[in-house]
Image 1 (cartoon, rainbow, N blue to C red):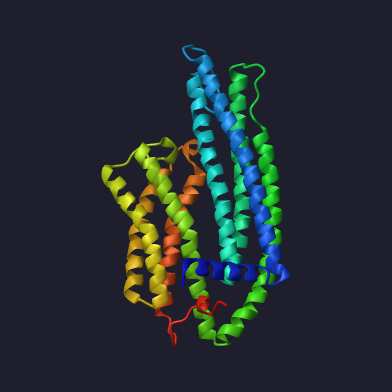
Image 2 (cartoon, one colour):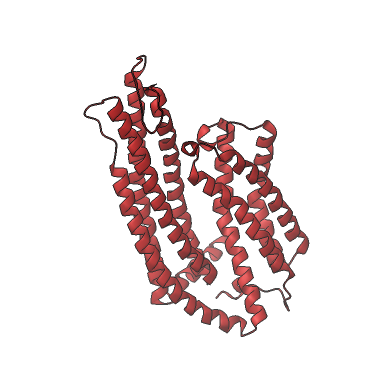
Length: 363
């Protein structure tokens, strides 16, 4: 089968799956609208954070070479120069830009994740997609609190150094409030649509695999394992590459000031193996290969040790120095690995009459 023929079959099947019912069409339209709205609003937040970062840089330039000091109540009990006063805020707004970029990239991934769930009639994946939307809304609330805190810090700097005709870029907070409201509305609507599709796909899957409870349980395990692998493509691989870049350039924004060349080599090796190992795991799953699945599980345990070490270096005793978004993302890597390992082991140890997967029956 040629590439063009394969692409034609894929596109025809995808269109058929999208147009199966009004619920599938509504789910896709809502997902596309959500991704578009969130990316646009988040890009506006990114621009505002960049503007605030530039403004703080201008403060430093204006006071460079001068010994003017001021006391920042939330920062220090003793007077400090402008460069010292702005350092924490500069660092945090630099990190906020990374958060904005990461979140926009995740919205693009979420769009693919939804199309893939509809294509494969994966009810577990659709449900997870809806729950992730709620988590994104929670992230929006965290963004608001972070902006409020650090814009307040900028206002303190302006007041303490008696800067005139200067205000912090407060529009970032208001855009984030709108963004969070939009995400909550879409999350609730998509949860309703996911429930409708769950009932629809439940009947379709029942017609394919029958009423055998053991087979239904096996299929759910299969869906969960495949879904976790897809999520780990973004979270594991994306995080690993970002952190590897941070280690290579010794960037303080990634909490990698203290590391050894051995750790760099070890982490680079783990990063390079993530994608091939996910393909190996999928091959082991489809071919019921116990040895390859055990190999994948051993790799996951090795990767967990790497990321536990990174997590330990990401936590600071000073709350102002902790990047809670980064710590959350670091936590997702070992959590994903821990979820994949027992799920994969359960999958290959399930008894089945023949090798089988739902994709084999796709029209």
